[in-house]
Image 1 (spheres, rainbow, N blue to C red):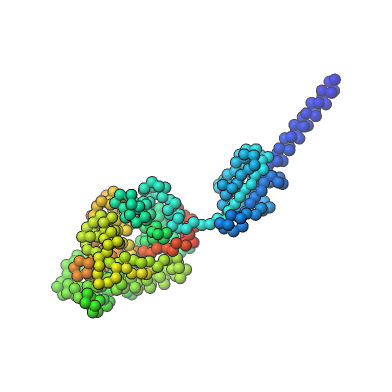
Image 2: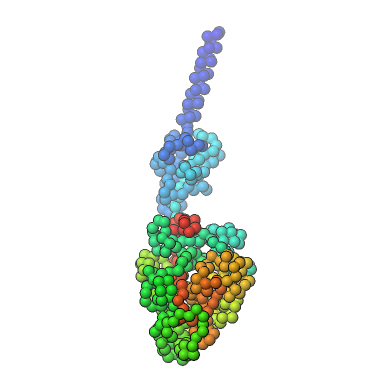
Length: 434
């Protein structure tokens, strides 16, 4: 009797050991701990795991693969389709690049991977808008945004948003001269402005050139059309800190009233849309969209003397009617005065743009550089000879196009086909595009 019990005990132990060994062998590669795997390899039991790989991007067609490692580069785990038959749950551990499973280890599971498709840059930026105005420094300018543009744009506003983009170079880290910043998303196009003033390396030493970092809006000796349609030479290229002009200079200005039209600007035709385009190269130029710029301008009181919203309306939607067209199509332009206005935090949007030099405003305006710089819009007061600008103090100003040595920051919109590749958008980790 004792021997019989002894045999039963031994048989029971052997059966338990067999069951344990069987269950251990049933582990088919779905990981519950990162320590169970080495080098992203899959150890799987036949017919317990099916790995499905998408055949073409966005096709929704999959085929089974026998590969022995999880796909990483160029693929993304499909959370919706990946599942198990007996309630097991699957997830992706991005840190260890492996699939995790919770539930019955002997479950039959199906793991799906899609071909990774980079999002359009415009979609990526809009995805950073959480639905709460101001999160990630992004404001959606729909009709309900108080004092906003009302144009359904997504704009960056505030002190120092993560809106840097590397453009014009594939180098890592991105060269300082290739850093740009996102003004916003407009009709699926991302609008950029150079993060720092452009130098003669990009803009050249002809056209409206004055110094390595300073340019006139129009150059000495350029030919413009006055209001009667006749041609006149521009006024001499002289730098003034103040607008204390002699009678002879005022006479020259009045006879060259159209020299502040973007159409006749040497900064436009030579430095930006010839030299700059040539210097960044054909491959980068292809990424820049042809843009219809609103260049009708308006009075000083209607732009500089207004809040950002009213300035926007007077500059963009209700520009002044002049003897020149209110639109001009080209790739490269400059900021609008209203772009500068909306770059400040919303607390400034009730203030006239002339007063943006207030310390509490310019400290929360990421576009402020502390330099005199040009905008694209002209002032129709005073026989149409001034151009709107940002002064070094921070307010919107008005300068003659021919007598100031002012910083230039090229502005342009990227085509809607430009995709986001990587980067958080900080100055040290700018967005990379492809």
